[in-house]
Length: 285
Image 1: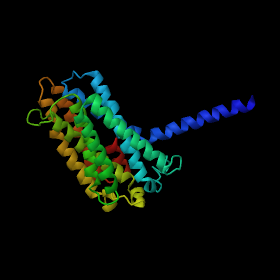
Image 2: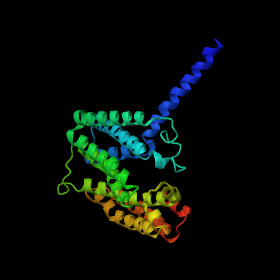
Image 3: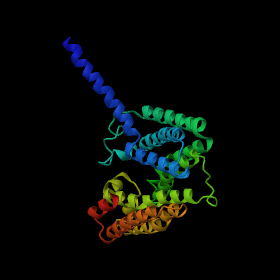
Image 4: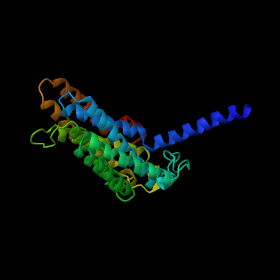
């Protein structure tokens, strides 16, 4: 009796820990941002009247594709992750999951996600999901150890969920017919540069130790990272007005976009003027 009561909690704890490791493979915080992007894009594309079931299916399919990309990214970077404090406890470098297990998880989720999007949502959404996966895994991940241009490629992958949500709603991607899709894509694309530069500055020493060619590693002064953050924040301001200008009665949106954009620009300028962890974390937040 005493043996069984001790063994059961241990088995349960082991099972929960294993599930937790697989969840960690999906990078939940990044996945949440991806799904918010898909949801907002689908909502805007349908002029605020989305088909809730179609949008739900798009979110589920995208979640599977994103999970696969994050898992494969961690598989390819497991040796570099082991060299950085912020990633050393991930399931692969910590030895809690094997490369075979992660490869199987990634293969299963990309196939399931692509098929789900194709047959339940649309072929266009499935193709865009596969393209996003390929950019993130096949381009962004290997470029991180080769060139600081990896940020540019990563920002493209980060903005692609806008197009998935847009096509899932059945809306046209033709910017001549409706420029809002292109505007939303550019909003997410440009927003990522101040975000990336702040993270890269905060963890520049760890990135350098792992051989990651982030901009603050290539340029230890951080000036190029600061300039890039300011330029992206400046460009984001006019682009962010476009969705509000394309529909009547959205003056509140334009005002909010302006205030938020100016706030980010001020943080980026402070980061450029005083390159330290405090200004970087303020910009990041």
